[in-house]
Picture 1 (cartoon, one colour):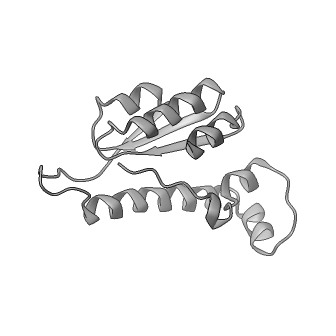
Picture 2: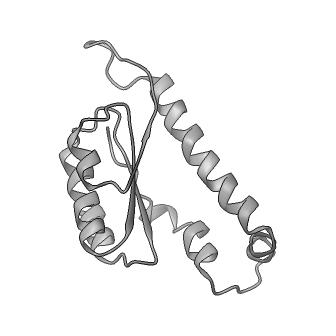
Length: 130
């Protein structure tokens, strides 16, 4: 339910990224729906292009590997998802290097880059299950 609350606070200035290998996670899909209804841009990272999560995504990034029925949560899939998230972060930093340096050095920069890259406290991190 915490994901739903966070998604309901998003605005058109925010981006929501939903991770679901199968694309059928009801919680992640519903969170994406809430975020989209609030005007946020939505990105789905999934292995299944025709899954429910893609209905609420402005952008779909297909990644991961095919998993067998008994395989469950594959470490290869998680590494692929983390790699894509790392690439997104690196591109944000590259696009706004001056702001990234100011943020890293602790200077107060009030812009969309800071909102996009600011990490919440560990108690507020949400990592949806696939």
